[in-house]
Length: 152
Image 1 (tube, rainbow, N blue to C red):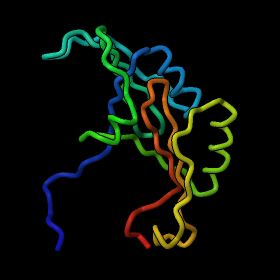
Image 2 (cartoon, one colour):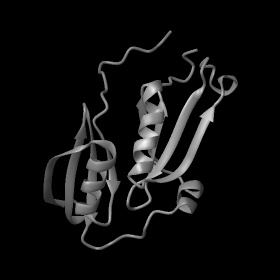
Image 3 (cartoon, helix red, strand yellow):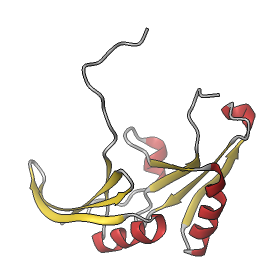
Image 4 (cartoon, rainbow, N blue to C red):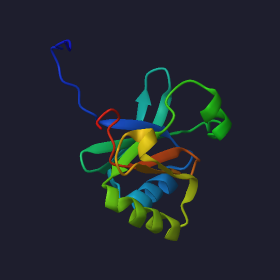
């Protein structure tokens, strides 16, 4: 029997560290349809001044951070060999993955993965298509067809 909790959580945002705020805002707007909602420099505890921007799509946000002192760039080696948050995953209706992929290709998006998981792997009768694209700093954004593990 599931445990009852005295609260209900809702998804709000994911934070991504970027090297060039203007470039990143433009990329998320152009490639994925996000819109700039808010931008400001905050003096964060134990961190100092950080430029932050929130880009919004539907009911969720991506919070972009640009530190004045640049950090090391993201690498796939770090992704595969370290603990921590690995990527942002978005989903589209099944029929929208192919047009989205074509759109991103026409915009020059950098793809890391284009794959279709078969029904045997997912349990979903049609399987599940997935792509990973890289943002301007190499951060991986996964976009998959609608799929809920264990649903089928």
